[in-house]
Length: 155
Image (cartoon, rainbow, N blue to C red; front, side):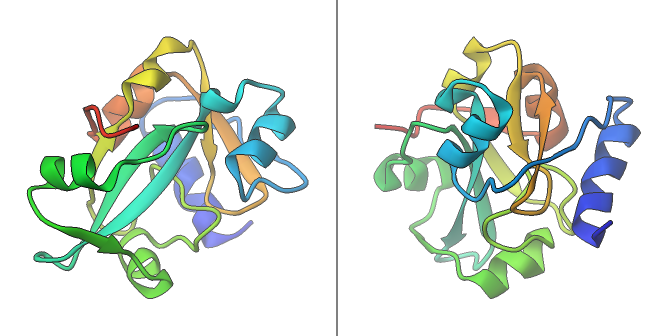
């Protein structure tokens, strides 16, 4: 089991949640993850990471699978201009590689925002630290574990 996957499992268990991590063929995209989970595209909680231009830190926007983050809205929430986060920043802050960034189990704390669309479902699915693993979680638990603030940052 990879270190990334172990961190996600540990975060779920520490929160006293079932660590129902599932290995799937491929889940690099929201569409692949939805197909693997057998759920609606918007039940996929995508972890979109930006780089804060002033702070230099990674910022996490958890959005429903079919939604796109609007940079201006996200920037207003973050209180700074946002740029593209490169693989090195993402790995240094979260401990995950692009394509498998989990919303929990990060190496370092990260500021996060949550797309309200995710709250419309009983269960959403998120990456579990690899491009081949996903896990189910209630939107309320996702919000609690990530400390994400519900906000409008989508088109």
